[in-house]
Length: 356
Image (cartoon, rainbow, N blue to C red; front, side, top):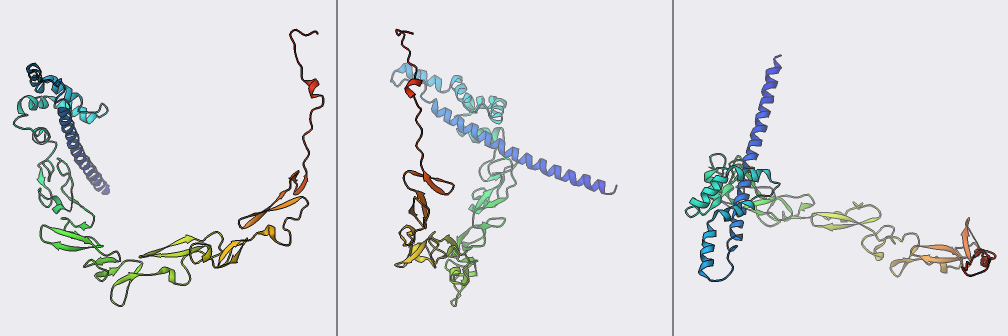
């Protein structure tokens, strides 16, 4: 019974955390929806700019265009194209705030030409200015001018959601994205600026750009007499790290195992000339492994009657000669198909004018 209050408290804590996370996610989503609406509004505005203008220079067309430019008809044409029919969030937001869109169109557009700023940030308040986040549009870490000191992304940037924490770019770390990760070194830094540069490929940690500036070598590299990180040639050791039917290919900081040529039984590299010995059906000839032509040997390899030998790469085949077919391991005479007797008699010819 003593544990029950603690369990209830833990359940309540988890519930509140999940609810808070969902709420922040919804606030971000609302801003993205509003941003989509204002972007589509601007596209619709451009699309309808010359819609009712025939291209002439008559005063009548000019007057007609002038009336259409600020008309409710044009507004409705733009609003109809703001959302996909399947987007509930978008359509709901437009319906809920259609009056504010009309107000901007007829009364605020000239003084406040930036629809996103007037509608999303200042009026319905689902977004924040760039570089700020949260319900009160607080500045991101590092300031609103350069969130995360220009080295990361501020959570919730430009929305009423998020917590303002930084997700640092590759090579940067720390709360303010001013520190360098392993594999990078600080080329320049002060209280508000940091430039992290990648170490030499051989370094795990370093103080500069060359292989002599490594604090620690990466796996596959070792420190030489000059305290520089150099490649470990894994392929030079014995035994080889690869299987018997493979050869080792060294690379910077690593190695790979490649399949030997199929004419080889073991090899030291690619090709038939790098075999340690030849596979069955092949023999050494002029420094390479070549096919053995079993069919040209003095002792026949196909010993059954009416057989002939056909050479193949690394092997041979025994097949029956013409007029014979294989049956139970023997070549037997091919029996021609028997023609039907009295085939002419079996064909019935009907003549409508013939006699029965």
